[in-house]
Structures are given as C-alpha cells and as structure tokens.
Length: 255
Image (spheres, rainbow, N blue to C red):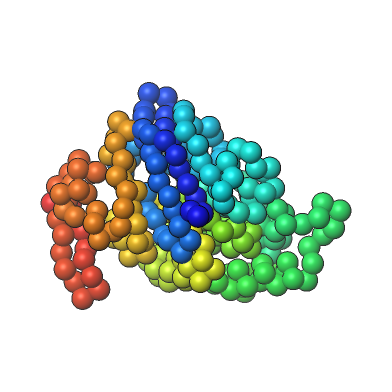
C-alpha cells in the first residue's frame, strides 16, 4: 500500500492551474523533489498534500485513509510540514520550541515526559544546536532558527516530511550535511520525504524521484534517472539547461 496516494488530483490557486488529474503513489523509503519555475505552484501543492488547503478536485489518501477524514491530531502524527518561511518568534528557549513537535502525541492533561525531552535533545544534536538548547529563539540567526524548525519537525516524528525550501538561510555545510543526515534518518525509519527545492543540484543529490511542474497543469513524475535530462529540465525552467559530469556525479547549469 502506498503511504501517500493521489487520485485524479487537481490543484488551482487564483488563475494558476498547478496540476490537473494527477494520480501518483508514493512509497515508504522514497525521497521526492518538486521542481518548477517561480510561481508555478510548488508551495501550494505541498500545502494541499498536507491537507492545509482543499484541492479543486480529486483525493489524497494518507496511510490508506482520505486525508480530510482524519483528525488534525491523527494527521500530525503521520505528516509534518516545514514552511518556506516561519517568522513567528516567541521568547521561548530553543528546547521548549523544539518540544512543541511532541504536541500531537501528548495527553492534553500531561506535560512532556523524560522520553519526549530525550527525543527533542536528539533532534537538536541532529541539527547541531544541542549547545544552544537554553538560548532564547529571539537570539538566533536566520540559519539557526531554520535548524530549530527542522529539529521540531524531527521531534514530531511523522512518517512523511514535507519540506518547503529546507535549505533557506542555511550555509553550504548545513545544506549538505544536515539535510543529508535528516534524509538518511527518515530513510532508516522507512518514511517519506518530499522536498520543494530551487537548487536543482541539491535536489538531485538527495532525491530518487522527481515531480516536475511545467505550468498550466502539466506534470511529470518518475525516477531521477529518467527525468533529470537536459531536454526535460530545459522545458521545466523555460531555459536551456546543460549537464556536466563531475567526480561527485552529474551537475546541471544554465546555458
């Protein structure tokens, strides 16, 4: 059974058709990247997959159940989303902020257990913030706040991670090492990661499948090896894309 199943999904925003009659099954252990030009609707599609906005038509099944039939608590136990930007800052410590990821699992009448705190501390180690757990969120840089947001998502422990531009505000080291560690961790859990990325090469480094948005509802999906070609990516970005071979694999650049 597919962990996430889309049946005849059509998504629209304003006068933009993001996808039309998209049917797609996503299996455990897969990592997908959503690629497309600015304004084509990548973030809108991700929010629709999260159940945060209704599709124009079609259905989304999460673990075999229609996503809109699930309670918010049940949905959050299975699926978590990192938004492109999160400017909401409270004068709370980094650890307390990361612990908010445990809310879908907590009894409303009880606080966090020692096990919850241990999960949050592990997540902080994963994103290299364990030495800042007592710091106020308001004192962190943009990159540090981004890593704290990712740590909260790790602490939530959903089976599916939806990450909208997770490399925002991160320097090259954290883009490669931290995202690599996070994705490897989710593969080991037999979960799913779906990324919206602007950086083609970073997307290809971590993904095994692509969901390409061409505009006007046209979509292609499939393995990276099939879709990561000069011809197809040139159509996606409406710009001539060239491919180069390096010691670390293929590399795309604009012609």
